[in-house]
Length: 88
Image 1 (cartoon, helix red, strand yellow):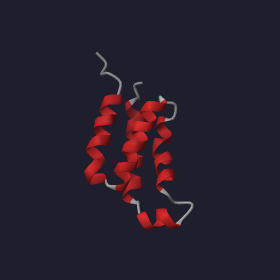
Image 2 (cartoon, helix red, strand yellow):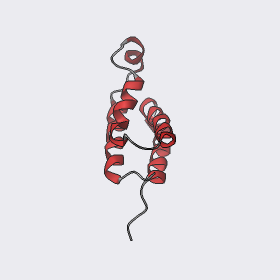
Image 3 (cartoon, helix red, strand yellow):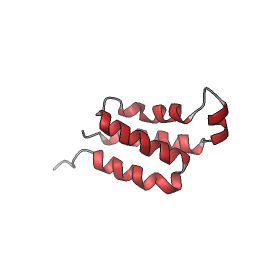
C-alpha cells in the first residue's frame, strides 16, 4: 500500500523528535513514558496502512528512536519502498 509523502514526512519528523528525547532509564521507570508510546505517537499519521507494513514501520521506528545513527537509513529505505510511484 502506498503512503502519501506528507504522511511519511510527518512520521519522520515525529520519529526524529522521539529519538531526540529518548532516555532509556525513563522508559524503564516511568509508566507514562516508554518506547511503545513513542512508537505509537510516531505511527499516528500512517494509521490505516496494511498490518504487514505497519509492523515493519513499527520495528524500524523503534530502532531509529533507540539508535538513530545505526538505523535511520533502514527507515528511509522503507519509506521509499512504501511511497507511491512518482506521477508521470
